[in-house]
Amino acid sequence: MATKVIYEKSRGLKDNPLTYCPGCSHGTIHKLVAESLVELDVLERTIAVAPVGCSVLAYNYFNCDGIQAAHGRAPAVATGIKRVCPDKIVFAYQGDGDLASIGTAEIIHAAHRGENFTVIFVNNAIYGMTGGQMAPTTLINQKTTTSPYGRFEETTGKPLLVSEMLATIPGAAYIERVSVHDHAHILKAKRAIKKAFKYQVEGKGFCMVEVLAACPIGWNVSPVDSMKFVRDQMMPYYPLGVYKDKEGVQ
Image 1 (cartoon, rainbow, N blue to C red):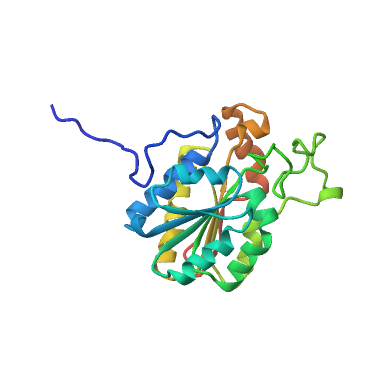
Image 2 (image 1 turned 120 degrees about the vertical axis):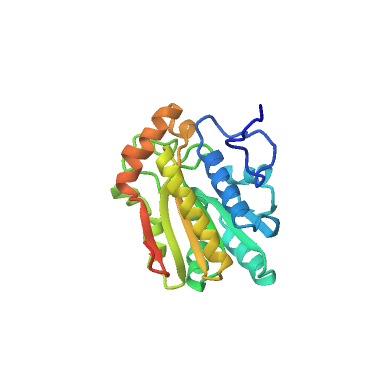
């Protein structure tokens, strides 16, 4: 009796075992990125750029070329690669402490210039690898190692809404926020990520997909409860949806 293959790991990923914390969303997001690159037949000409933080581990898993950037500088490095090698598919893979704090200038100006690369923005509302500190995306009253009594709006302001901000920039072609906390939302996230790469192939300009993600260790909760936190706490403040699409397809 012949064996029927129902599912197999994407060849866009290496055969290395994941070393992320239990319940971390990075593995799921890696899978969606890898599958998108393979389905668009661009894996062999793709270059990944990832900076400091949990993102830096991505080189162990994506089966494509990769370059490490200084903290927050992935958009600047991606800009240089894409301009020198316009035939390559280039993507930056960044966390929120990286993109929304240390690298705010880089992401804003890359979008403003309309650079033709793709950004995968992993928002888990905390600095994960470096010790669980408060990030620009940390929610009001959320406890971290640097806000043990919770984040207070009067001293640190409200969490930064990156997708909404970048959507106002004329150079941005496509901005969408998704989540990977359950199967239905994972499927929607896959469509968004694939679209962001497809737009790059078509030369449409700067694209970013923000992914609401879980960090159980940083949040000091169980993997199951971390998914509930994404659904019940993050999504009300960070509404999912398309914030910019130059093609007008919402």
